[in-house]
Image (cartoon, rainbow, N blue to C red; front, top):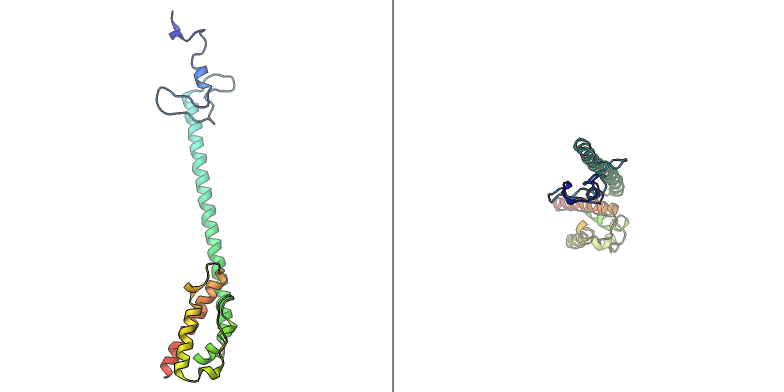
Amino acid sequence: GGGGGGGGGGNLLAPRLEGASANYGSNRSVSSNTSLLDENGAPRSREELKKMREQRTADAVQATVDQQRDKVAQEEAARDHKREMARDVKEHVDSWRQGKTNMRAILSTLHEIVPPGLKWEPLTLAKLIQPSDVKKAYKRALLVIHPDKLPDTASLRDQVLAQEVFDAVREAWALFQHEL
């Protein structure tokens, strides 16, 4: 007798270790990408298996760190792009505002600057003579150009443009009210 009834002697562990996952008497399974046998078919030592596991762990940690670095780099590039675009849009709005010192001039030329897709009908100065007419046009303009009222399909540039124009109209309104 002897040998534990496994039959034919030899390495009793080898048949059990060759599968994709083997249990060592516990509920832990061994990953299928780890060969518990070396190139000669002999079982690997605990130290060798431990080193292999530590290397896999280190590789996984490094991969996660690399992914996080890439994500941060992409986010930073997107922020830089947004800042540059916002600067260009602000210059465009400032150029439009140049020489327009009152609310009537702002409202009568608003159609030149509003983002595409917004429904703003051009107004003539004749329609903006009375302060009550200016107030009505101002309120209508706020409804049209408010950044939250843009369609979901609006580009980032259009969103920034709407915000800049909205701010410019509100500033002009504050000056207009002060003049009254």
